[in-house]
Amino acid sequence: MTSATIPLRPAHPVKGYGRLLVAADRALRAFAATDAASALAYGLRHGDALVAARGQGTVERLVQEGRL
Image (tube, rainbow, N blue to C red; front, side, top):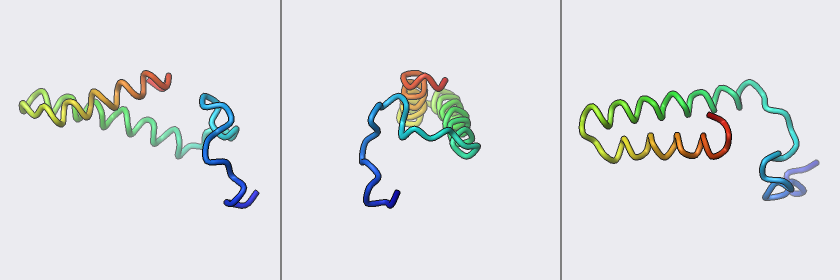
């Protein structure tokens, strides 16, 4: 399959493009969760609402996707 024939959207959004997750995908998910926790902790500790909101948004997306 060439890049010109790869669909822009997956046929089924939950299943993605039908490929299995590789270690890099799982690592990226773990990094996102760690970064979100760090942003929440920093934002709340230092009174930085924007950083805390970014962390909260990431957590919400991960939960919504069933990844957390």
